[in-house]
Image: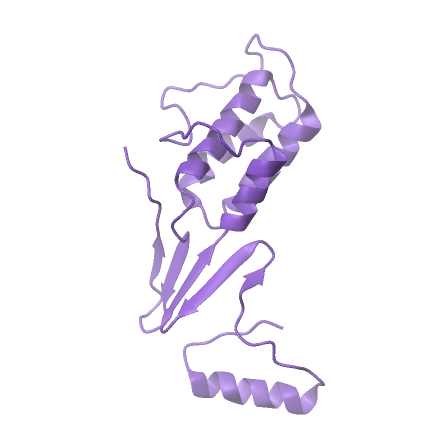
Length: 165
């Protein structure tokens, strides 16, 4: 069970009441959960999907891809029939699904992923290339934690990338 809060005393009280009611063991602070890496330093919590993104690079043989400075070409107009051959639907869906999951912490790719996800039923080679470009953009912005929370403030969430143009 994962639980959190801004008050140590409330967390301890909840933990003790759960321990009294159920047999359980304390595994300590959360470090990794469902592809999310969690790092806690004093009153800050950082959430990242760096390992998940790296696994996507490996899966699609893009470990050394050329860095893209934007997730999608500014003038990109995707169409159902774009004159290129059909792409492998299973691979395309796997890549776009991975990008959708990555979008939980990478809100900077959400729009672009939404655009390419419209072509899940009949992707072309061009659509696949656009999806791969999003992954190349992620490669250039992977080193900074995606989300951070300050536990001392009222609901302060910060999104970061390390994009350098």
